[in-house]
Amino acid sequence: MEKWFAMIEKHRQKMQDVLDFMWKNPETGYREWKANAYLKEAYEKLGYQPLMAGDIPGFYMDLDTGRPGPKILILGELDSLICLEHPDADPETGAVHACGHCAQSAALLGLAAALKEPGALDGLSGSIRLCVVPAEELIETGFREELRKKGIIHYFGGKVEFLYRGYFDGCDLAFMIHTSSGKPGTFVVHRGSNGCMVKNITYHGKAAHAGGAPHLGVNALYAANLGLSAINALRETFRDDDHIRVHPILTAGGVAVNAIPDTVKLESYVRGASMEAIAEANVRVNRALAGSAAAMGANVTLCDRPGYTPLINDETLNELMADAMRTVVPAENVEVNDHWTTGCTDMGDLSAVMPAIHPHCSGASGVGHGADYRISDFESACMNSAKAQLALVRILLENEAEKAKLVVKNAHPRYESFEAYFKAMDEITLDVEAVEYHGRTASISF
Image (cartoon, rainbow, N blue to C red; front, side):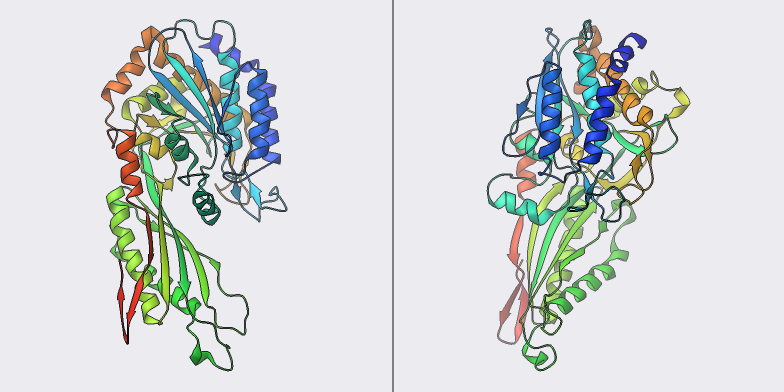
């Protein structure tokens, strides 16, 4: 593979420039316009013609070998997190790349540059779609709901939105490598991770003077507190194998200390290892939220939206990725395990409709999503990642794309078609004012 890796080495500085620019210009999901413009120009200089999403950031490009075969989708993510305590956070927005997406983008550009080198496609069949995708971190869900209401997006996650828009039509398999902490020069290939549902919760009470006439009000904050306590009381009922995680945050809790809060807002996920487990847990959570509102004489509006489907890494593709990684680092630095992680990614949604994988490479230090996270090893996070991806491209598409065809043949994604997937996602959507009052009695209305 040394011949092919040398093609990536030629573009080391370009990759470092991408990493530096994105670290210094972090943007959260569906706001990544600076990175979008910077990367568009960088890919155009390489000879690509990006097909832009237009009303949201992100784009994709196709590269054809000139010989028939499957189409590989390879992705890199644009967005950052929010971590106000991080020393490099944007002082206005709190945004910072505390999950390493900047390294993904650098590696993807290095791969793209190598694939444009003379002879890079020799002996390969099929085609490659390179995708610069927005909005993987499932944050600022209120903002995303406003985009949805305006008709700009249909789904909160960037990959799900791109899938909905048809940008992945014709793609047969997908992969990307995520940066993580760990021993320098290592890779990890694992079984999969949780999916999730997104919840926006609004408690409605009645304002009154908090000192002079509290008996005339209905305290939405107290109702919300009861709801949070009720969710906590449910936790021991969740089965360990379902990996359920529920972690609400309070985003609005009142506006004046001398007024009974009449509107209180929460955001939450319900995470789990299967869509069935997520749905079952969510029913319990909604009952807890609604029952708490009824106990206080308040009401609660529940807005449930599809989040991400559990990631099931394709076994055949996992094995081939491990082989590719072993061409970059010593075999003992490649760990293949049966571990299940409880975070979520919209790569899970791609794994629900096509064979897909989401392994990790080292190169970061600190706690993911934390104030000490940073890309500390460019070689591991960017160079090794790009080389492993190039190695996998060659493994998949050489010999008339024999291995890629094997992956597609052996795959059993959860949904038989994109249409079946979107039908299932849309069934998750819920908008309901959850309590009905009948004189002195109340009932839950869902």
